[in-house]
Image (cartoon, rainbow over all chains, first blue to last red; front, side):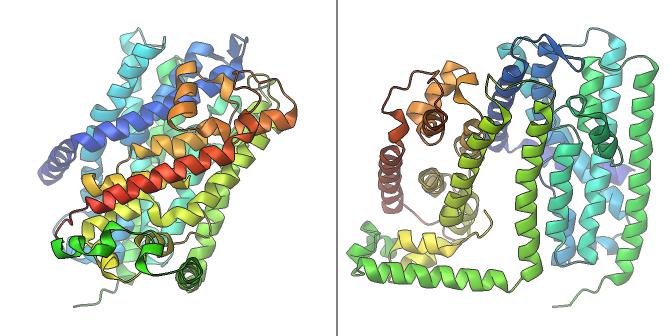
Length: 263
Length: 250
């Protein structure tokens, strides 16, 4: 545990030094948020509420979904796949540590930097430009924090799992890319899932993706309340555990296949 | 590398000044691209994956908007079909641009500056612009902006994510009717990055819709001129960058 803590801390420190890059990323995420907010506002037109979303909820949705791009690594993550291709994986597997834990610790450090540099700052910038929703009860804030942590766990677990395809396929990059593209739609990142018809939502719920962005948004906006919140968090925890376990199994199988050329 | 920078060819990085005629230049470009396509075709499955996933991105984006159209009646008084026309025109234009100018893609070009690949190109007896254009070709994927973005990497060395605001941001912005945006953002994409002329103005004219943002009667026809001016500006900036380029020493 101590080892993972140190790894996470170092990764956090490493990432937090790239201030210019963080600023550029922040500006980009924020700008795209403005574009997306304008589109949703135009969709709403004169209607005050659609599918449980008020205009204010919709604008907040665009801010929140842009804010989690960094922490949840929504666009791409091929670090483990690259380590497998380069053979770097072999030396890390020789070390007396858990390989999945090693990457989880690194991802935790990185996610925390992103959360501070990009996530929180985008929401502050949004609050300056728009009249956004801010939870008022301690209970909702607590549920929101838990939802963010669990969403990161689910996100890391599936990203790690698809990256392991590099053990088998020389085209893992394509497979990983596929998963990411599907996740934009099914996680409720592109549009809130509530705007989709029921049958589309049910299809999305067959995947782990809604338990990342969509759950964070619904908990933050208070679209679900009471015991529904507990169920949503439990569903996140279930997917996190299931995917982490799947990752371990697949890693075991992958290690057996691993042949690294010396040189 | 400083000796290479003093060489006469570096101050005039176009094919003409290097003793290559337009025809030879085109022929060289054709050969470079031909080699690129052949190398892409060596990895067929990889290529198929890239090809399908690029299609999937467009599909997923369209589906999200099209499905949401069922909840709402219109997007700023535009119907799904009309927005689709906007989206289609900008996507085709942007992907064509990416295909031709991917050699200037700031992320890839930044790496060649960082690792010294660009220094090697400078030593070869052919036009620099042509070589960078021919260095990569994307069969699956606003040229002027890419060139500007790449030139900036001469100074920043690392590629700058913020340039995405102008390229992908412009593409995203042009996918929906321009009048829904705040006047400040509209002005940005009219005067700073003149994207509004590329598809919004012509599509408004084509659909016979009222021009809601007051672009004037000539706006639908301005795209070629705006494009030409932007390209000339970008190439001038590129030359300025090449003249002031100091290798990273890698």
